[in-house]
Image (cartoon, rainbow, N blue to C red; front, side):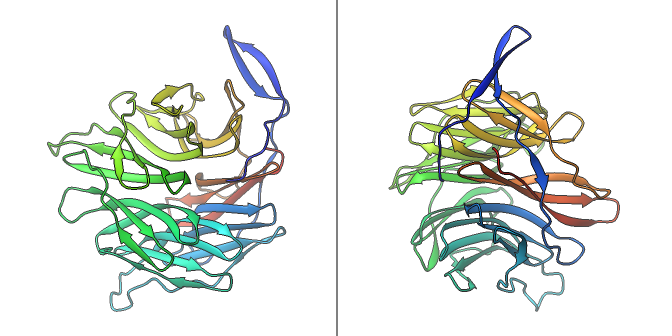
Length: 363
């Protein structure tokens, strides 16, 4: 992650509370991306600079696109399908790059899938014990140090899953699974080889139990351990995480239909103020005082939220066009003010989707 100093703030009193808002609202716009087939989506994004970014998703198979400063273009990537199975499908859920010559992408499709970019082309990587694994997110710390997280189902009950990349293969590493019925890790972020966070949710038996509890685990360089995390209501799900330093990290999601934001201060996770939205689905940061998140309001409309050190402001996303519902599933930021958000516009009536990419350059 590349950080820069926060922008100036304007302060307003709303309902008796002091709320910090950006001195000028960011200008978001839709940037055309490439659709492949009738069900294309973009799930994850990472930016190296204002003129170099990667996005990954799927269209029944894996989909990789690259931004060159002018446009998004599809980049050839491995065929992830099992052609012996006529119902085979695959998708990439996340991508992360450490340089122009090193990036990784992970996903699922009849098991875990993973790819690596070497500066010239993408190739498929082996995932240990991946047959029952779905990988949801990835964080690359170096070309030989990356983490992917998700869920595995060796039995009916789901367990958390983590795989570590050493530059050639993805090895299985044990992770806590506190839920007796189900466990998910949905996102991963880190600042160093000994400071990595993963977040998601867990649930206990009996099978009719619908209560979901927040789940946060931490890698200290030698093992993963669960770290206590707040629950807001009986349905607390953490969907994304961003780490800025060992003493500054954010996790976002929802609890009982209300957006949830948790903050790490170096010693504990606590509930922080959150924008008045229904959910927060993705988060990224330009600096400790310039954090961006995306989510939806109570009516399902897409919105962007911005933390500037002492409060959140939020704004409507630009119209994505089409007849479907826009959603953002991944965000990435790079200085001096570029923030990307990717997802899809999905029309549930006919089962078609188009990829969605949005950007601000004055974030």
